[in-house]
Length: 280
Length: 302
Image 1 (tube, rainbow over the protein chains, first blue to last red):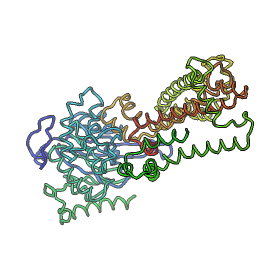
Image 2: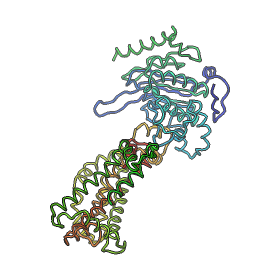
Image 3: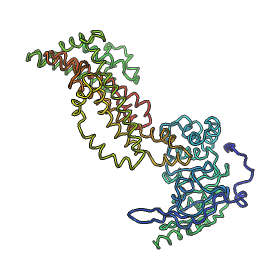
């Protein structure tokens, strides 16, 4: 219903789903380990032997109890955290640090209060290599329109609701046209109604822009509703318990949450999480 | 005279809230806007009123008890001392302007050097956790020391010119900025740093686009404190030994038992302090409009 954003690079006109089926892995994680060495508690195994491949255009959700290392994993993929051992490649190249191919959305919007929404959204352009802001303002306006923030460009973050701020944060993550979008419990701080709206919004953005999304969440139903695959993690050490294919039809609609198939996936994930709770 | 001087600015700065009432034709020209103002911003009426009452009490006390003029001169005498002191040329060392200029120069120079150094070193210290932990006990120890105590030493080192005054002011203003800059830099939301790092920001870009602006509310809190301290530093420096400045003039008139002039000089000092404070507040509102501190200052501005 809203006009699609012109991507900076041309993309083949296949739907995300068809593309995902035959696409190469955009993220390859091989025997990844992350150990924190602490004085008081000795070595803490935050991530243990993680193996995961994410295909181009895929929507992957990661669920798990707190302390299972899901945020650590996301920080590693964002290039913000060094890992202890293993191999990670993004887009075929070994992960060496932050990359333009990766956009990051935090639990909080993390907008700078002294900048307008437009200026916040363009912040990534000012970092790193020399780039001109004006080359990206059209794209910023289009993306703001896509998430329904048209007309709020000159407002300051505190004038916007929590949901609107998080939409702006998503636009900021998309401004450099990354292939991979990492979202770390992005809607955890929002109320239930807004959260459902934002879930639909994310799916719409994902479908229109054909990004690959890795989405960390506490919410089982959010994971099932959004994802092609759900990665269930367990804590201490953080490890992958199971990866589930969610073969619910797309586009997803809120009514599906009440369907039998949806409930089956949700209870299966809950059982996996409970089993890991009992062990620890 | 005091009455008109205080009510006029008040009516002039009345917020444009209720134009209908002020335009009312019913006789009481001043009362209606004043009443409206009293309801909306009572401090705009009550604050000048308090001033008038205090001056009246002072005047009554001087008339009724007739204390010696070197103990409590009547307000009228202080007023004439102020007028005669201010009517002298800025280059005339017997008038107030000359000495106010010297004191202001000392205070401002020290303030700029001290706070500039405090911000720079504070930010540098906060950059390294180790450096901060090593230096912090010393910073706290020196901060709790009354810096004024070193003033006589500076006079011995640098003589009776303006250098020791600037130096004292520098030291006095340095520490609030040092401590507040460290606190400000440490208060930056780590997610903001992560955001910048995830976009390949250089350390310089992180500092100028994230850390420094995030720390600004803290820095301004320090600047407000340092602004008051800078005049204190200059005056104390002049008390220890000086050839010019308001502090020197206060001592000189004190010895001559010209107490009305001493009171008039207090007024000059208060005016200097107030204008410095208002300047800082305007700067804060401009650069920190987004912080809650800045917005609160906006609301209860005088």
